[in-house]
Image (cartoon, rainbow, N blue to C red; front, side, top):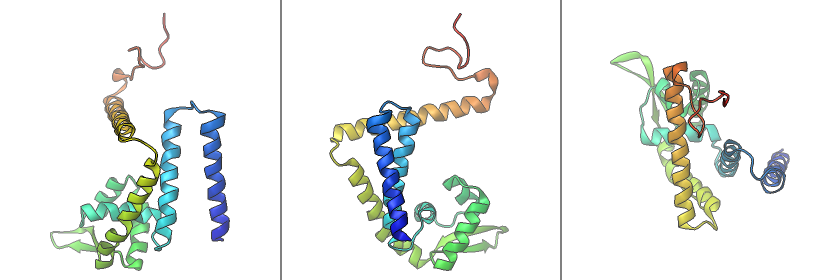
Length: 188
């Protein structure tokens, strides 16, 4: 079964490479970023699986290594996941002995999530794997290219965050294209 999954993943990787190098090398940036993200995830997931850690648990561990003791709701928000999804993952993580959930005396309504000793120890094992994946992805890129890519991606994040704010402000703040016209408007 593992070999079949590995074969499917290799085939998916081949299709992505063919798409970007042959079929449509100038496809939209969003698609390129999505495929890069999927490639990072596949590579890291293969390494995490060797230690019986799912990719979804990785997200929660990373957050908790920085902010141990968050409420389930705060953890859901940080991970960008719905609360029921978080709850299912946390129950499994409790079974695996990586986290424990506890109500605090001051607010018995909220469950706080804490790393166990095992969950804390995993950081020394798993973070180097993520660093290895990053190093593999950046191979053959100069520091100048890495810096330019980082600046470009951060600018995209900033632009899209501003767009989110404009969208939340309502229709009077319609996004504009690069020429300053409202998206969807016609040139006279």
